[in-house]
Image 1 (cartoon, helix red, strand yellow):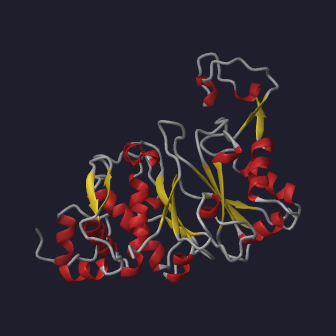
Image 2 (tube, helix red, strand yellow; image 1 turned 30 degrees about the vertical axis):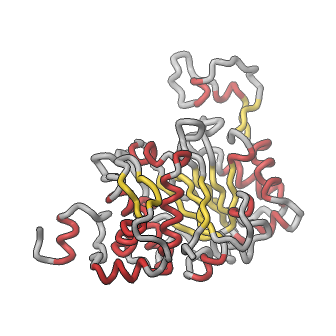
Length: 344
């Protein structure tokens, strides 16, 4: 072990490649005060090594990530979501795909801790976003064993594997927030975990009608995974910028209208997607033995319900972002929503 306090943690192999805050007893105790829960309470077992994520161990990693004590309930909820079997953290941790867990925060806690949902929402500058997302990654490394090149075998990864955490901009959204759509009350605080690639920016400063804009957004999403992946394998997250959301909602469109329009509109004829004689072309349809008529239209998205819609980003600029998900179905990942509780 190095004599330098910061270097020692690199030597121990417990960092994400960046320096960590040494988790002294005093710092961990201060962190634990942020959640009135038994320090030995088991929140979950973190795949793939299934290390025990107790409140104390989560707090230790939150200290290392640079969290404030008031962030701890959000980190605990994110870890709980990650350990839910339907999220399939085991598969994501070992896949060669790009995906990383994206934490989406809703409700009063987002405002209370100053978590960014506006301008630069996926970027730097906000301690809550940066350290909460990082804390989950450190839990994955130190309790789940997800070390790059050993267990984590992503071909490329993406920067969200350092930290990936945003809030939904509920104050400017014309629609109900994500956690309400998923069965909670507007007054609840919640995190939703989504397994996603990096954001793919969509720039449309011209469309002024809802149908025109949603079609523009949808066809911008047509190439995700690859241009012949019709339909994609699971969920896709659409992060609608506030200006785009206003244009769409001003005509009375709901989130469900957006989802249905995308499902109905973004389609290509089977003849353009059919694999070559040896299955050489990159179409998902090579796995589908059902013959189709050449002009039958195949949807990009498996169903309207597998398009998630949230509002976030700055109020100036007609931009949105699409985030392709990881695998769907029984072998893939489903988004998971958990209440944020301080244990009171």
